[in-house]
Length: 160
Image 1: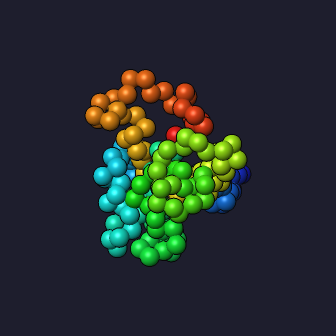
Image 2: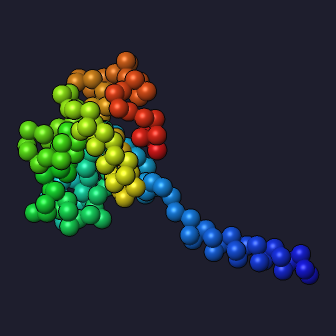
Image 3: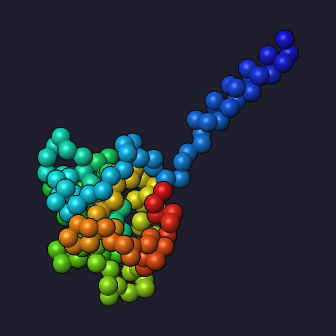
């Protein structure tokens, strides 16, 4: 009888503690997928029934819960529906910066990008996919030379 009571108490305690344990990163709610630029454009917040997606460093996040920031006519709507890595690094909404190109960024901007990527997007929004440009050539064929570990400012933990 005492063993049963201890087991029940243990299970209740585990269940209570499990409620308080939080994941460091938001889990994906759907399987992740590969997005072309054209596909990603569909998730720009212009259609109410569609989710809102934003890519940074080739990782596509579902930012729909931040609709007040990223939805239609919202302050950061320019960033969604595309890979806005450069704009996030520079904290810019200039149309010329709405690209995945990180060439010419300063060390400070790259550090800011990593900080925002890790501290904001990966902690607040689920990853729903990756941009095709990370692993495909212009013609759509696989980039045989692509190795995540060789990418500048890429960490394997970016994938999870």
